[in-house]
Length: 184
Image (cartoon, rainbow, N blue to C red):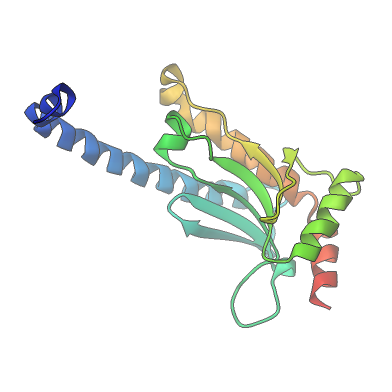
């Protein structure tokens, strides 16, 4: 026997399909928005030939400097400055994972070194320090977009992301020296 809720859902299935299709479109638009940030970053005064913009997935982008490239054939980087979990559930719903971050790519000793330098204020990064083993150094959550703010989504979210990336990128010289030491 079907519950009242599922009967209501089935009776309005055409509307449900329309909502699901619109949700897929929203996901696509959010991914396009993330990629568009690459152009905005490239217009920043600090952006130069050494910076790289990477789309990791539909919900994640990051930037990394060429000096942070790991040795080897693959274009992997020691540090990532990025945004992840950029999806409707996180931005508008109950999920709370959308975050900006500076992350160390699979190097626990480098993670420890950089965390110590942040704690000692030798490296100044935006956001809150993270003390967990996955390699995150700092993170900052993007605030929920309230229903009355949705029409201004881009003008609210874009500066938050650009400012975080810029503040982390300001530490490029220090981070490059740390990355160079890790390659030895």
